[in-house]
Length: 393
Image 1: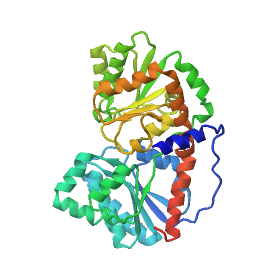
Image 2: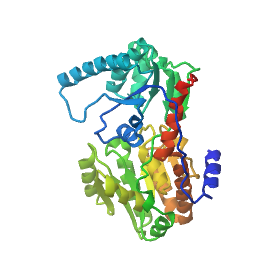
Image 3: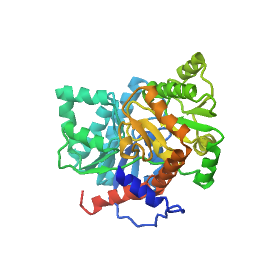
């Protein structure tokens, strides 16, 4: 991670937003499998933001619905999708299929391996981009001879893998992906819509008035929301005179429980915002100083990259691809601990040292500005896709 600090320090000397030159790409004819683009979520947001389907060579194929379905309706839709997928591959002569599964409790795992099987049956090239990873299900696959067989004969036969962290390459190899497979380390994307209204100087100035911590994500226990709340409560006892706030932005099944927990413990200065989009999201990104995400397990959450882009140091658990973008004492703090006291210690370092906050926040802004904005991520991905036309998979 010393390299990350060196790159960031050199970028700090730049004052202008990087310019992505207009390029002409020679692309294969591709079909990209995506969830319903009407649903708010990481994968949907990624493909909506990058808009690959605006290129006539790339087509999005939606494989899920935005509304809840009955089991018979879901099974009928799934079978229909497989039929449409097979038909479209033949009729429109797609050369490459890109699948975006999550290694979850089983639904995505089983659904998407069939798409891969159909693509391989028709001799199409395949890209697998794992977007989420549920470690207990990884163990289920390893313990099951049948699931391991399915994995080795579908996912492990792909032509190329995009991963959100080096840890996922190691995990895929342990599940049977050949060691000589083509792996590419990629990222998610940061929402850059509000950059015109963002300044580091403005954010730094507001830090002296009130330190604002931000939890931005799905509200459920596995995202570490209760660790974040407990850490903030500990911090308040250590710095009783300090003006500070924790904003909780997001929606999810744990929202009511979180509100009750805060009320029961009588924790002051916590604001539960619920789902944020448009102006509400702009407000929390522009006003918050430090991002807190002690999530149990992750791929590489968009919120981490967005926190970086808007000048926030990151405090998070060292899970998934997070250690590939955050390093201790460089641009934030990460730990494998589940102890709120550990995260309170990290938070306290910023309270005690405003210069540390400013240095890390500035570093993160320039890292993200040059690596995670939609224009830059899209350019990288289209360059990857172009490899298929060059036969260098």
